[in-house]
Image (tube, rainbow, N blue to C red; front, side, top):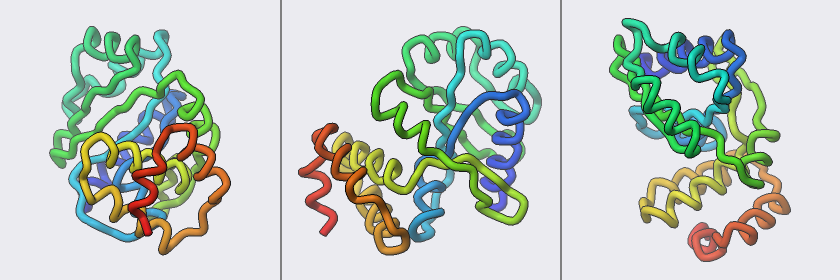
Length: 182
């Protein structure tokens, strides 16, 4: 786990210093609101504008990281896709998911908050409700039970805004997946 923490600290510090907006999602984020479980990667939603591609590449084109070629990052930024960084000393994979240009992503981005997840490690993180919604989407796409387990852990440990959840569950057509959480 120390390797993941080191990679998270170094990666988010670099993004913050460069003024590149991000927030933590995925299993590490779910654990902040729910129950711990094993994970071997970091998932970050990152807002990279066209003018930030070169600075981003310079941030991570070092011996400490594997960073894809600029052309790949440029293509992914244009299509709103994703790519991976590898933190070389720990071997930790960092999934860099580009912020989408849609209503839910805008809401998710506006609701992120910076919290201290460990002593002296402050990280921008998605809200518990937004993590639940994304986990429902991932479950719908792939059927992996780990997403439902993460959601149940969040609901057991964290008070959530059910009005907000129900709004997005309806808008995104996730009622069937949500019904599996009882």
